[in-house]
Image (cartoon, rainbow, N blue to C red):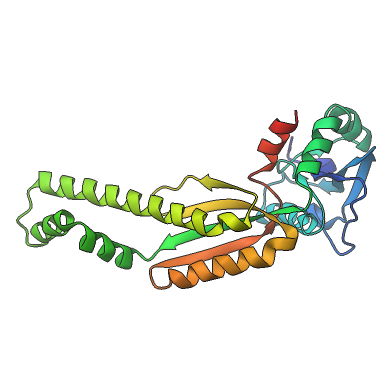
Length: 251
């Protein structure tokens, strides 16, 4: 647990013991990470000694950078940000040994896989025009409100209809996204979206050797939706959205 002063061994994640760390990596506090091994598995850690609590943007980026770099070449189970052990021996006795089998099984299931995250943000004016063209009742009520003839209940009804139409558009776009990318991924999970967040956000587990095909499929989808959405692709990443489920299945 983080305190005002942090001293100990910062944990990034779990990897196979044969994994090799890139020499140029720097972690939290600009320290070089190394591994604490236990049989076929290893914890990736670095020494942290700083007079402040963890949680700065620099700390968060360093944590993610280590994990994402590792994911480019090996299986990795991400640790929760801010996990610090007093000494390396405690990492073995309190973490690696008690969960040795589940960690090994989970790493085997993630072998050769990386995560990509795709977010789709609607161009509001374009999508609203689609909705008005497809649903005459919404267009009629909007015209009433614009003309000043809409009573309060008309405004409420208009808001309800627009919200429902936006939700249906999001759902349809999510279905299309998954249909296009399904041949190029091993697993997928949707992230909930609300309000002004991207209309669709989903994480995909992809074979490392198949990433070029996946990236091309995303690019083709972005071209198909050009003008009505902005498609953003992040990756390759550590399997943040899948490691928990994999571990549950391995136990």
